[in-house]
Length: 353
Image 1 (cartoon, rainbow, N blue to C red):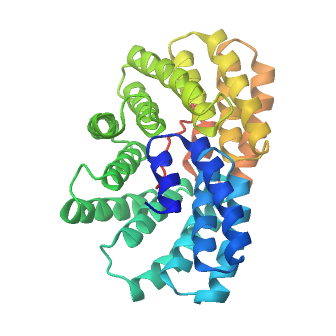
Image 2: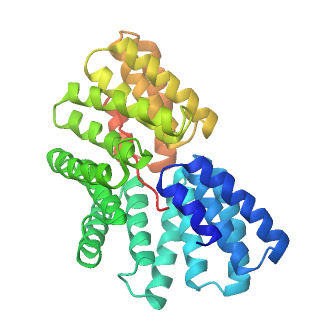
């Protein structure tokens, strides 16, 4: 068993903080023993950045991934598979931090370079394609995102089978693509299958299983089962609070979705309380301009309107729409939803470990 695999084992079990503590200790030892530019040191730095992202500290992940990318570029060259893997991880950090366009640009660069050096069906290529599709969907390029996800999922099925963890994660992304394109029943049915697959592989309380449960709650509500969405959302928020903490982005986004379900059910006080808690947490974790925080702000406007507080609702909605237009433009799905007084959902994505 290698030093790096110890942290990977903890990540696979959902013990993200334990993996981070171990990998940080090992990285310090490797830097002292081998130096900052040694390939083993750089591999551990790459692992530690994954840990930071999994515990919800994407800014620390971004800083470390950028440093590792610079060092791997200098030591291995800009098109070495390890360099490109770190570049893909950096793009994932940017997406978590709300820089969707920057993420797309990096992932497209990696796609072009990886295609020249690796078989297209190897995990590195498939993970990058899957990640690119997520970033495209976040920027509002729904048709292209769905096309890439569908093609990637078919390649996963052919090469690795439906129960491979990465194949399940890709299927979850495809369910999100279905939902974004308006096919709510297809999203619900596929997510149900993926959720059961995660339960078999990881157990009910694993953060990735709970991420699936979060998305399933969204799709239940979208297909008309509001009570089912509330029950699923409650269990998800409680499970994520226990497993990754109340301030983790997974938990805060699950709160947004549960607040949406409460609001649709007419439980306005609960929707407002939970929405404000999520908004405060997202502002502390990121900034008020982060897309998750802006979506939460737009949802709070819908809730305030339902409570009869029309002046406050209109002011909050106008602020959210202005920021959405600045970031994404007039035609982005979130801008359109906010203009139409519709609630914005926040789907979650299991991360490679």
